[in-house]
Length: 85
Image (cartoon, rainbow, N blue to C red):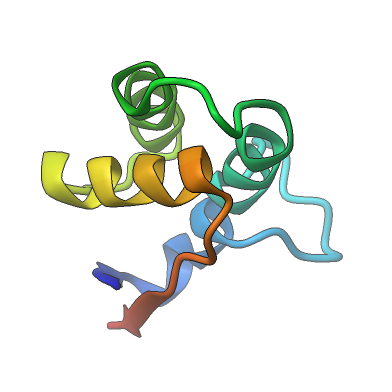
């Protein structure tokens, strides 16, 4: 399980919502990769997650991204604790 701190004004960068956030959320990118990259190498998935995190201006650590990539690779659920500041 990972954890990230996100300012309330930046929450839309992380989560998909119904307000039509102009940029694709990290949640949407994660879901897309979970559908299309299950079984692929974790390093390949982690690189794509890094790009999505950078585009969303989210500060995931390399360890967080690798854990997420492993969850996608194996088809397991990934729990992320979000602390809104």
